[in-house]
Length: 212
Image (cartoon, rainbow, N blue to C red; front, side, top):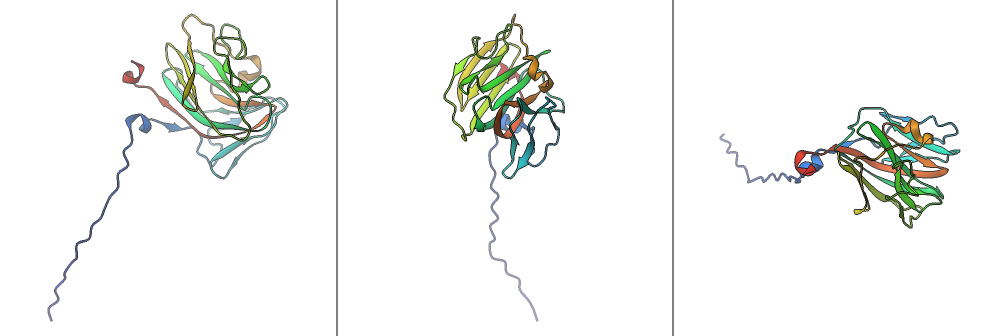
């Protein structure tokens, strides 16, 4: 008996999702499941930090600060960090992002000074509430905000929900952190008497074309 094997046309379709070169460079800093490469910052009086479903890191109320500090290496210039943050409860900053600027450090404050101030602490000794970066924004509780920070040899730029709100030159400026958040260096996120949630924390280095 002869058997004849006939194959119908089977069409196998592979779908390729186009990914931009910039997208490929992003490195997750938070895996959404554990606190790997993070440590709870020992401010004294800090609240509990937990990881919950949906890739969310929660920072509970502190007296006064709660936060986490990244323990792996990070670039000091020509990089971008982005994350999403929201204030769950409280009336002060829900994202105090401390980051390196060459050999110095400073902090991006989102929602400070009774909940509305966004700015950099500190520039020439002046806090986020009293320098050229100061913004007053109506920030609502239980709403995610997308934060994007860029550091180059020339300055610091910040976008909130894709709108650029800060463009601060750093040449000739004294860049410092407030004493309270020195333990957040070189890279850390903290809150002030506020309960917050964080997600999608990632970083990338900038190439020469982008720097131009």
